[in-house]
Length: 341
Image 1: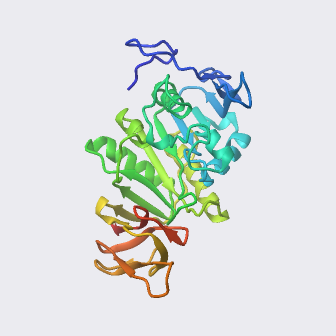
Image 2: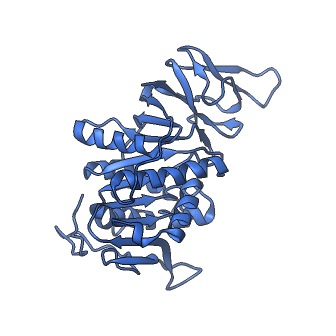
Image 3: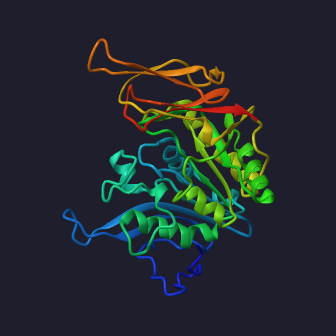
């Protein structure tokens, strides 16, 4: 995946990225700028997509890449990272911090999960392409220019407009034990109320997968949802960022101790609707559920005597995620059950 040197020289005939940073990513200092991607449109013939970036470099040390806005309707990450970029003290940094509060800036600007330019879901197109869509070009730049520089990566998510989660930090079950142990330790250091070892429904195209394939220490989160942020979940993000930077040795001090419940989220814990209709939640987030217990009903809203479909938990555990709006379509995720580790 690292088909380009840090200097930007293409390897193996791969085209150079059209994205250019307006700031030096490597020189000492604190800089604010943009990742500039030329984009000609009806609104701006010689326009550009301008993705904000902040880089702090001070002496020798590891590099942390901190991202939010991978999906544009998830707000805790952007809020916490814009605040960090505005307040970061260079003298307290040992190493380098790269902050991209809105990876998919067009999506964040529009309040959408996907880009309004090309309908691209950034978290499904990695490793991307330097000659592809706008979203694919952004993914390619991260893979070939930012990720190779990083030692530890944090990507902050929440549920967006269609899901709601218990506030958790997460890592993935990895085959490499040493790599998995590093990610697990970093996840615990983040200090969210819940810590989850995840198995994705489909890991193909994920930013997570691109990071892990490079052997980087990776932590992600799901901090709420419903298409908004909450004061409590923003505080979790802010505290977790500082904890992670301390864990990496980039900031002085030890991570702030926090009680966290460890859960495993297996692929068999997903409850997916096979019907259209009105949802009745039968358990709330954090509630314990037994295998076979009723978690939701779906009603045919078109008639008063329509069919009622019951959905039951495939495993025992706690409800860690749920569908947020009151209506579902076939294929929507109704909920996810995780079990204590």
